[in-house]
Image (cartoon, rainbow, N blue to C red):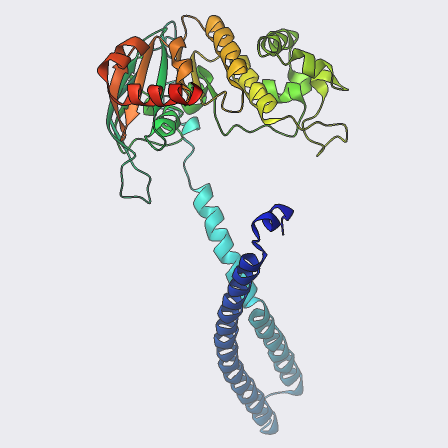
Length: 381
């Protein structure tokens, strides 16, 4: 039991729930083994009757001198081997049944088609400019009847920095997931330079993207390997130079330099006792460095600075937008103070884009954006 659970006096609830689940598991196992035992008992009776009958028959034939002693010995040994085989099958049948259930899940996974190796998909696009368009996109999860996005349409023009804002659950992160091809729209189209992204080779498409997610993951490898997504031996000198620039931009160069092995230091102690566990803010900056190092033409930032304080967030936005100037980018942030860095703001509400415009234009409309901005401003007042 986690020691933090004791703060909330959760021991009784956890023990009670564990007891309920264990009792349920016992009942299920009891029913299974009762039925299985009865079935095996019936099979054993039938097998034994067959064996006794077979032995009786060959003994009878031996007494009548219609079977030689040599043939009797042969038949007798064959029956013994058959008995051993049947008993082994009965012994391992339940194990084979359980393994077969596991293998069914494996086979279902292996049968999923990997579209990234589909030779019919587009593998080259003119990327001198990047334009993104959602056209009447609807989306719901396979197990749900409710639509997350309904008739969602918007355009991100070449070189434009767009902020996507809205209440929790409005569909902002779903838009990012669809842009990254993690899911397919239920209907509608997502276009990159007029081409449906479903028709673009996935591996090639991922080279175009430079995303940073709010639920980022760092691997328990070296810092340079995390940023470059390559083994240390495969990282070029030019990559290291770019890495240094991103570290300086994100204000983590000094921290990395203070580590025992610098960029070669491992994250966590899983593979190295001298590894370090970065704080949430430092981890998020490393994730941003990885996105910058990827050098994709379309930059996506889904709450990239949620673990940072407002001052650090401002510095990072100013520096990153200076570097990515004239590149098409989309960022999501709950701190509406950051929207002032955007060329245009999209307001997502109930699964569609309800408002769009600059910060000043949306404040004049007296709708959701003004309500959210005013609420945040009052909290900081």
